Length: 345
Ligand code: PHE
View (cartoon, rainbow, N blue to C red):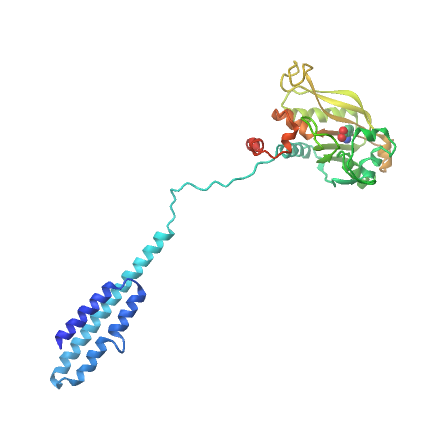
């Protein structure tokens, strides 16, 4: 009998050792310790033994059972530890691997200029106004002192959607909305940046879509000197310290007097170079005192208040500031061009 026990033990140890998974080990447990298992079979055989041999035999079977249980338990722990190791190996994070670089976009140069202007004017207590790009003739022209038969309409070739609806040709349309909204309340101090459209043929200096930022201040005793001081401050902030501005007489239907504004050339400090074509000055914007008729039409008394307005083209500023020689670069989405501006944002 004891030979048979040794054999069961040997078989059990062998099966335990060769079980590679917790499931296989479970089968081994059933095979040896289960109700129909080999050790139970030995127990059952005990009843056929002579009475005096039974106690010793019983002890041996119990010892065998204990040993097999112990070995099963040890192997179970071993397998679980192995499985854990394996899982850890699989989930391991190699912190020495280089990270994946996420491609991020860059801020468009025109938006950089817009943000710079917004910061500058917010700092002087202005607000930033927004308005529709699809505009009514009324705000784009009528309220800006450009009635239907006015020759100044030819100055701005317009994309019409229907006789009363158009793509705004200047941000002045937004000014008119703001003036109307203010309903005679003073003061008004705002800028309106945004896209505008004109029926121009695209070339190095023209684009049918471009951006403007317009400024408008209306209050008591606002003079041309306030406009000049404001624009001088803007020129110094945008193009570096030491800039001066000069006014040349001009014409816009919505301002009187109207001026064309030049900035002393930031490239040669006014001495004359290829950028300023030897003149020492660069034209950057149109401006003027808000026309009394415009104030009147919008519900303000021109005897009691006055205002100035200016409109600057953002492409022009960006081209000067970043040395860009073709306006089409802003609109053709060439990544090589756009990526150059990541160091400015
Ligand atoms: N609206 C004018 C333009 O688009 C610019 C301007 C704005 C001029 C405000 C004077 C005052 O050309």
